[in-house]
Amino acid sequence: MFFNLPTLLTWARIVAIPLIIGVFYWEGLNAAQQNLLATVLFVVFALTDWADGYLARKLNQTSAFGAFLDPVADKFLVCASLLVLVHLDRANVFVALIIIGREIAISALREWMAIIGATKSVAVHMIGKLKTTVQMVAIPFLLFNGVLLGVVDTHVWGTWLIWASAVLTVWSMVYYLRKALPEIRAKAR
Image (cartoon, rainbow, N blue to C red; front, side, top):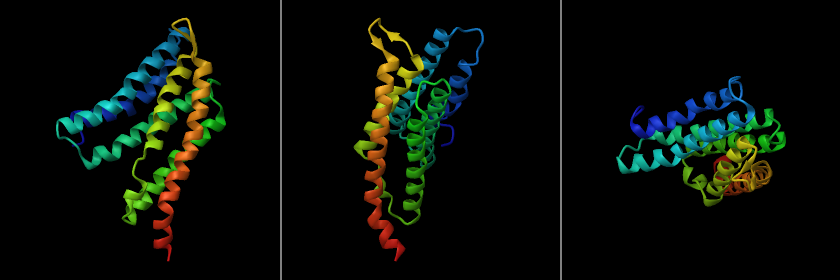
């Protein structure tokens, strides 16, 4: 199950990280071309998140390894992209710290809850999915960093969306911590 089609799509998100970063160091491209190529790469590889889950269920190729690797690939892709955006001065460092810090904290919480046999209390919730959706729209807007279709200033919209994502990030973290707290208190006795 390490190399079936759904898992290969998940691996592709991890492989995409140096490609997206490398675009901004490619001297043969001007800034607008770099922005467009990085945006296209991010969107294509972000769509593999939907495709790998769909194919795993459709082809009956779900696996424990795939269930582990999928959120790891998502977090790598988002965190690496945020660091690129901070480096390019398109995203605030505090937004990146909030989002990356939450990802580390919730990953650790989920691992701990798995150890104590209480994974259901921190199962993915709609607020987490909403946070991810907003991030997945904000990041390509900020990577593009221009005017889309002659109307949409992607930097302005991306900035608003990434801050909204940071708020949703904190909200989802509080939600998961509140759901886990009774289990944590019960095991601490």
